[in-house]
Amino acid sequence: MGEILFLNPVFKSMIWGGNKLGTKWGYAIPSQTTGECWAVSAHPNGDCTVRDGRFAGKTLSGLWADEPGLFGNAGGAGGRFPLLVKIIDAKSDLSIQVHPDDAYAAEHENGSFGKTECWYILDAPEGAELVIGHNAKDKAELEDMIRNGKWDAFIRKVPVKKGDFIQIEPGTVHAIKGGIEILETQQNSDITYRVYDYGRLSDGKPRQLHIEQSLDVITVPAKSVEESIIGAQELERRFVKNMLNPIISCKYYRVWHMEVDGQAQLEQNEPFLIVSVIEGSGQINGCPIKMGDHFILPNGFGKAELTGNLRMIASSTN
Ligand code: ZN
Image (cartoon, rainbow, N blue to C red; front, side):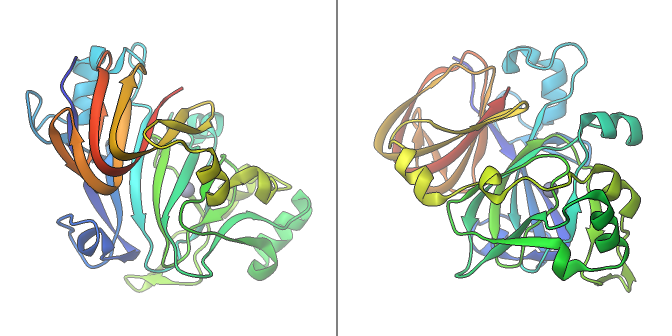
């Protein structure tokens, strides 16, 4: 049994960010517009360090490179850490955006990964909506709507609530709207093409848009809403307490939900397992854990004993 790898998150100030990562989550945030907590990341734009123990202070990218056995050699030779887990606090709307797939990113973005991502909605105000997909029926209409700024007709808003789960394939137009908090599990990539930014200014200037790249990568027509969202009620029906419950498996990751009520066991048989505590507090193998903690159970960890009242989202590579 290996050591539990607790990580120190990296925070990002964003024009749309708020302060809930401080007030609600208890993190030491850098500003009152902190939009993102990179909770488990080995990306050069935000590389988490190990909090304590034998590897204290070491970056996740360094650990991945130097101690591949901790991760079941999941990357193969020279591969990058595959996943990135974030908490996002959107005080106001994020820009309307889209991500490329691996092939497009490799060719146009210096060999970067593309980005498939998924969201577990941690909190959402009454009547909350997100942008998922668009209403253009073909490429010509897509171009017309984007080049001529027909945003109301273009973007597809869908209602969401706490506990919903959303899978966002590359090519899917998407945007988080103000008031929503999510836990995002994604490919380890930071490539985003901004389609529309509501005409906002950042430091007196509009942020850069990526119209040509967006037109290249947006899927037309968009996937249906039903194909993208699993509702909270449906998930609650499927979930069994005190067990890891699968939510999704795609080419890049698997994501699970686990609610611990009292006492539970978890058998870690994955190459490695990323765990984020999103509610409550308790212990893992006698070690205290609470909302806002993020850790990795390394390869061969075996059985973990959990106690307390906890809600967690876990993930591993596929
Ligand atoms: Zn995205």
